[in-house]
Image 1 (cartoon, rainbow over the protein chains, first blue to last red):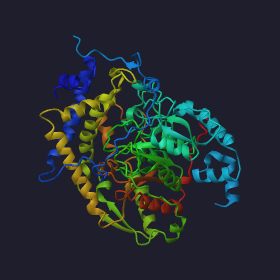
Image 2 (image 1 turned 90 degrees about the vertical axis):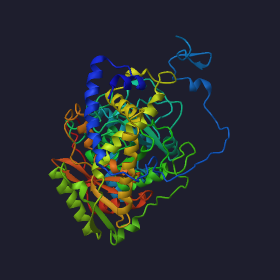
Image 3 (image 1 turned 180 degrees about the horizontal axis):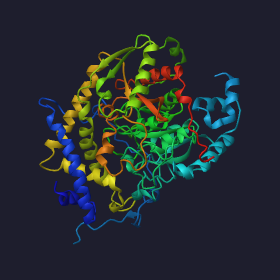
Image 4 (image 1 turned 120 degrees about the vertical axis):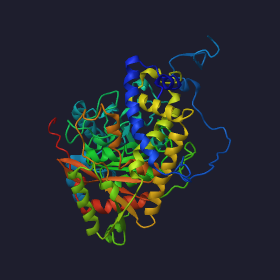
Length: 91
Length: 465
C-alpha cells in the first residue's frame, strides 16, 4: 500500500511517525483480508444492500426546514448568513 | 404483573423494567419526579467511577432513557465519542428520539461509545473508556458501551444503541443485559451519525425481552428520511399467551462454525447449557453449517471501511465540528483502509470481491432458514476482557466480532440475552432470525428468559456505593 497516496486521497493530515505506524497496521490487516482470495466467487453477484427495498421514490415536495441561524449554529466560521469555506480558485 | 409484587419491587425503583415502570406510574406508586431523581442519584454516585455518561440532563419529567452519543439530540451535545464533534449541538432530533418523546420517554443522558461506533471494547472513545459494572477492570464491550453499562448499572430504564457489526449485541452480552439488533430496514437511522450505511441499525438495550419488544414497536416503521426503512409499520404485540406453549414445534439451528477454535471453554459450556434449556422447553435442536462464516470478518473490514471513507468526507470542519486532524486512530485507520479498497486498480480485488462474499454469507443464512426457524450460538467467543488487553492490536480486536458480523452482513435480526456466567462475568446467548422476523427472535428469547433467572442478576456495585 502506498501510504502517502492513500493519505492524500483521504485528506488526513498525519505526522511522519503516524505514517509508519498505520502503514504497518494496515499491511497486517490487508494480509488477513487476502484470505478472501481463497473463496470461489465466480458467477456470484455482489450484494450492496440488504433491505429488500427497491426504487423508493419520494414526492418532490418542499417540506419544513430549519431556520438559517440554526443551520449555521455549528459552523466554525460564518459570514452574512453563509458558511465560510476555503477558496476553490485561489492558489 | 400483580400489584403486590410490583409494590415489593418499588423499594428499588431503579430495578424496575420499562413495562413495570409504566405500570407503577399509572398506579401512582411514585411520581415522574421521584423516578428521575432516583436515576439521577445513581448516576451521580456511579458515573465518576464507570464513565458511562458523557452528558446528563437533570430532568424531572418523563421515563428516563439513555441514548448512545452517536444519535443526535436537539440542544444536547452529541460527540459520537470523538474530539472532532466536541462542540456539536444538534439543531434537530433523530427520528427515533422524536418517537420516544411521543411515548413519554425523556433523554436522561448521552452514553459513552467508541469513537464513531468503531471498536469492540469502548476504549476508542476520545472521552476515556467506559468500565464494566460487573468488574471495573474489564471492558464493557463496544461500541454501545455506555448504553449497555447504563442498563446493567440501573442508571436508566432502558437505552438505545447502534449495531453495525455487533455493537449492541456484544456489549449487551458483556454487561448481562438484553440487546436487540433489529433487521436492517426496520428502524429509521435518520439523525444517527452514519458509520457504514448498508449495515447500521438502531436498537434497544433493556432489562428484559418484553421491554425490547416495546421499544422496537415505538421506534420502528417507515420514515421518509431513511429510504431503506420499511414503510409498513409492523405491530410487535406483547404476547404473554405464547409463553404457555413453550417452544414446541420450533426448530433451532446450531451452527458448528460458532463452536470452533477461539471459543472460550467457559463460554462454550454456558451456551451449551442454554441450548439444552431450549430443548427442554420443547425446541428441536438441529446442527447446521454456515460455511462462509470464517470469511465474515475479512469481508466486513473491506465493506465497512469503504462505506466509512465515503461517509466521512462530510467531516470537513466547515458546517460542524473541527478539522480532520482531530479524528482518533480507529477512524483514521478505517478511512485509509476504505480509500485503499476503493482506489483505482484495487476495487475489483477488494471491494467487489468482499461484496460477492457478502452474497455467499447471506445465502448461507437463507439456505439454513429453509430448515430452521432461528439460529442460536454465542454472541462473543469470550467474556469481557481486561481494559487495555487488545488496544494495540487492531486485528485481534476485529476478530473478536466473528460471531456477530455475519448477521450484520446479511441484515438479519439478532438478539443477545443473558444466559449465565463464566469467570463471574456475564455470557450472552445470540438468537438470529430471518430478515424481518424480529418478532420470532424476541418470542424465543422471551420464552427462554421466562424459564431462567439470568436477566434478574445484578452487578454488585458496592465498590462505590
